[in-house]
Image 1: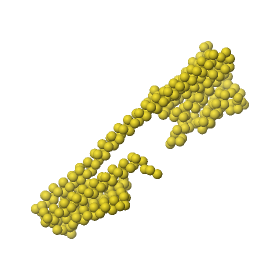
Image 2: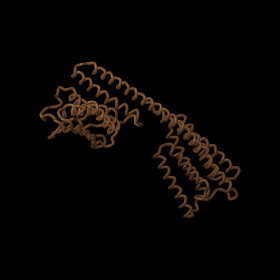
Image 3: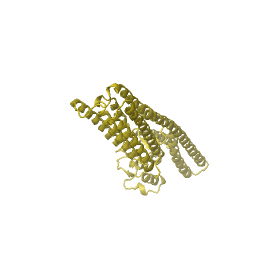
Image 4: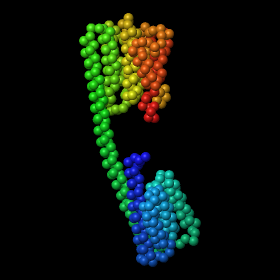
Length: 402
């Protein structure tokens, strides 16, 4: 299985930084060791530690070229850097040694391998610095300052320059380069996202236009037939198409291209149905109780079709012989991604012993199929007046992408 490009880039950045740290620190350690030996006339532990660090770190790089194990190289570099810095610090003044600041730099080498190792390494170095202070405070005589008094200022200067160059020339420069690369990558990603969003917005716009074209064709077909029953069937199909077109329209005119604000959608849909299905002498109110809820398009489309069927049935049959009435639509969120939709009216209703699932009408059978598509359960709730349905469903996208 191929590693993602982002992961490969991160590994490449770590490798480049660690190799550069090893090469630079090895070269500088060799140079400081030679200065200590020939310029400062030091022949004790300090110059030998510099030479040992330089040689072992270069061997570490050569070994990495064969085994290609970045973590192994990072851990080895961290250990020898830590041990070498502690020894030089102890033999050059302890807590007052200028070389102690190098311990702050080698913490970064620990974080190059893994975060958990870097964290352990951080607390180890903090504990070591405290221990060095306690050794000085206890005034142990077994460790003496090997730096001659006449060159201690120069040794301090070299130590500070060594620390500053590693911090700025290695870590700082590499981090700045990485930051610029990430900034450019972020700009490219944002541009790509904008292009895809515009493309997706255009797709929704075209789908809406195509659905509206289908709706117009159905409307023409309905007007050209004298059969009232066929007209009613065609207009029902037209309303179903329009309910889907509304969703795509809401998607391309709003910022969120994947989620529908369900309350706004139901309000627009029910107002459209009242204008197209309601008789001129009727005054039917729609009472909505829907909190602010975002649903995926895969959930909103079957829900919109289901509401279209139930509200249309209520207007056409529930208030068939009445001039006024009320339809209620309520949405309640049960838990993280579970919802309950209730649709009711105060119309004529029908007998409780009639199973709507087995009705021959396309609308009621469609309601049952849409409920199953939502992987929900549609049931009729007994009521003294009118008809009431309850649908328990789950947002389809949330279910498959937790």
